[in-house]
Image 1 (cartoon, rainbow over the protein chains, first blue to last red):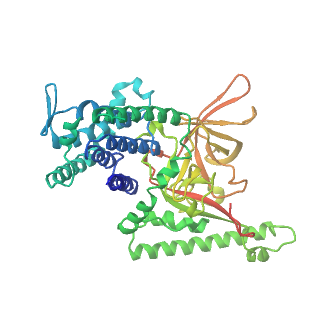
Image 2 (image 1 turned 180 degrees about the horizontal axis):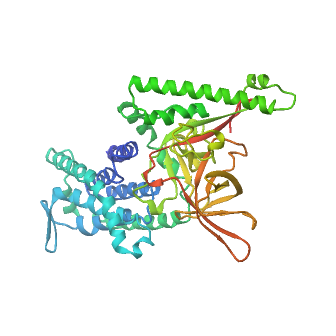
Length: 177
Length: 326
């Protein structure tokens, strides 16, 4: 069972990487790989899934490095501090913030993409923050155009698989924690 | 032994990941992953090749010989549409060009005599060439407009499977005519061999992927020659060493205090592998200061635009006489 899940996760992320490498001009970096990694992490929210997803994101950074591995650093922090400690089946609630569960994947993917885009600027470029932010935003726009629909479809599939009983509910994983 | 609660395991996994990431960032800073990177990128190659084979998009072309005749159709074809009338026009132009070149060659032979002492021109013609230069087309897999500031290497989809070795030059097809002028009877509007712009050099190769060290990378070095402009004509000038600086400009070193350098001089390769090859263009001198110690401080702006690079070509010398290739 564990090996089947591991194989499926590796296959999903590998295929996402293949698509990004094949259609370099059409699929901006992170547009497909980041949502795929988020699926691996959010599938049943276990420590193994988190380690696997984070490890794959780190491998992606090693293969195609930016100035700083912001996304691989942010992923475990976000998941452990915000997602795992939420206590509702329907939504994630932290303080006054309330996010419906199906929006978790797109939101996490967008945050990771923003982090990756920001880490693409060199330290020297951040000496002029206005320019650096503009550069990052210009890179972010085409990537978001791919990432948002991809993560939306994957979030729907994740929800559907939960409804169909194909996976252990994330809520069960959260309740155990 | 009691198992850890689930929450604790997640925190443990998270801490391990953060530690690994910080360690990886340090290792990357020291260049520890440079040998792993092509291998990692290569893991996706079987899938990429499969998707390319199934998709209707263009695939990698077969290697082709590079001679002035071979390059000519490329440059003309780009500007001449795809209809049959355009092809006929192109064919006619090529025939005229061919005839003109043959006539010029005959005149040159009559003027200068045999090329080698004791060897007749006809004998030279019948001998096979000792070396053959081929180009291997490749697509750039890492988009440079994403992170141009941190660019250290380009990944291309050609590797050991295509016979690539380390240090082979990588060029961009779209260049300019730089070593031909009125002296070579080139007139404005003539379609002649496109100059090839040097992108960099193969740094590491995996089976299907290679990493290219761009001309701007710190470790890049190449022997170059200046082309000086005088009265509208270009003449060969001093030779030196072009060094990447890790910024958008390169540095030209090895120039003597008596060498003449000026802003606007073109920088070309001083031969590939020590041999005269096709025209390889590096860039243009943008700064030339003569320092107090009798040394030149010369900055060169590379001609290649790494930001919008989609495809490149790898130059390969092949030793025909022995059958071995370098």
